[in-house]
Image 1 (cartoon, chains in turn blue, yellow):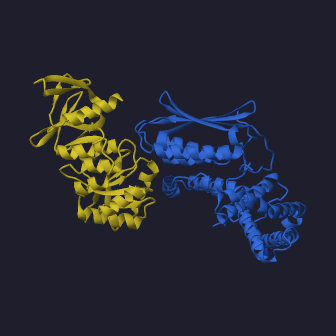
Image 2 (cartoon, chains in turn cyan, brown):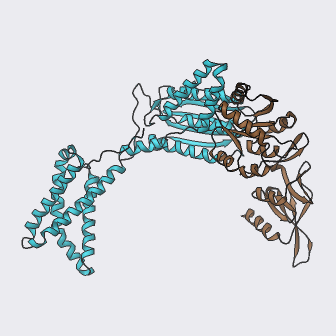
Image 3 (cartoon, chains in turn red, green):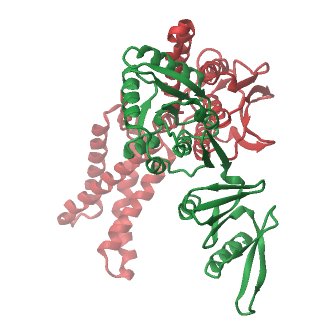
Length: 342
Length: 254
């Protein structure tokens, strides 16, 4: 089920100022490079460059003007056809310019045309990379790569717990498998769309029910959700990994009962969530915890840029993670992720 | 065929239940009796020696003390048990079991595999201490002294110094002394991060060093002693070790 994340290639928008600037600067840099390469004497270089500019500028400006107005029809063509069209346009303009400005030098025409073609191809290649680097598809792919992964340890232990229930309490076994299915459905989703906080909370509760089955009276969770704005839109699977961390680092290493607190509320236009667990200084695998936090932080950044915060600290023997995101209420339809810059 | 006496150690109640159910399922071909259960490594240490179990089904990831460490302590018992490790998902542990020919089962456990593992383990007997030590890369958190029917645990972080005396090593804690039968060299290697050698026969907990005191010698070549946190005794630093120990103090000041 590998989704090939290949965005169809597209020509850039030739009306975009950034694209025009890239083309102008790129073409001049290439021309300069060619002159530096061809002219061994520094003193003669400027003159050589000016001479080549006589040809370069009209072709460049002409091409840009045609591309500016032809951008729409180019965008409708398949990518490679569009490239050929651009190439043909530039070469034709170069031939015209060469014939007009250097009428006596027919011998150098093929060289000038070849140069124009090479510059065009290099610039098209560069723009293609540029389009790819800033495509929203990439932001989506990054979000997917960052999508929380559940610990395999949790999956196998949960299955084991369900197996132990099969004979004794088949109904509870069924419920637990349903919870597991919901959890994994969310985990395997693409994770690029906002979800309603109410749904995220119910997922948290399903996850907690499975852990409760496994850990029994070793774990106590205090839920403070009265002020949670259930209509708020939140990125998916941001809270669950935090609760999973709390269980893994706060409950599993302890031999006595451990208390976890989950508090979600709203203050003004901010949604705040706090998850707290006992801190065990000598428990191993703090590195895994840091990585999980970094992962969530990165996802919050992709969703909210600088508008979300994630802070973790140890206080009075408790490990605490606080998240704040902007409150946006959402009806039925969920919005897309904000996507990458540009 | 007589019943095989089995001890089950797992921190999750459902996992213990499941193992018991499976043992009941295979009872016809392999009669067993569960003679003890534990929810963490410490409980294993407390309950196992008196249980008379022949085989231990031991979860690897338990609070308090890991399964691998528990197995290492139990291996010092006069009647050391055969051990079958049980793990949900731990690639490192599984690799270590494979490398050192230790028996293990993956959760969820299948009845047929359980029967095969129990049969194999009970005929092969206790795994050697050496194999367990090689499998357990992480240092222990406890020293253990095995007595006839009990294991005394001494937390590594309570030990202030270790002193070699003839065949034994004496562990000194704030509360008292314990004797273990392990070579000082091996202990030095296992706990290199925690203890530093100050003398041919002595390792000191780095954290317990409060300072140094000149204890005589000539002016050109003074001799030094370690001043300890919480203990009156002074420990002599040998000439040979002094440069190393001195470095350590300098590091701490930085």
